[in-house]
Image 1 (cartoon, rainbow, N blue to C red):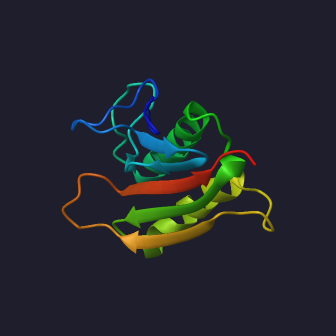
Image 2: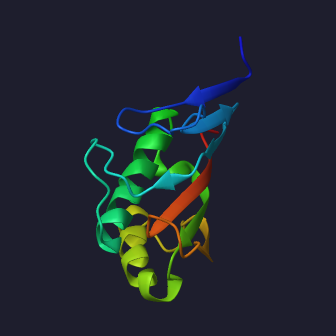
Length: 129
């Protein structure tokens, strides 16, 4: 039996032969998550729509691995314009992690200007115990 387990969930698939996330023991690390519609719809053109979808995908990914959003300990975001996008990001962040005393660590970096998306992210979670 493999020690490492690939995690995938319906509605999201990478073009390359990589899983949506990988888990060893209780540690889960996601691949890059975009703002695509997890229900298979198109990528929203606007930042707000992509932010909403990113948070939906975060939840789907951690739950597919057997965890919850409470297991997430770090999220990295890459945004085209962190200064103007922070309001949309913070709104969804506060909805997913409402307890200010129990939020994951977060880092926001600048995404390349030629990216076809407004933002991407990845996260780390420790599931159980």
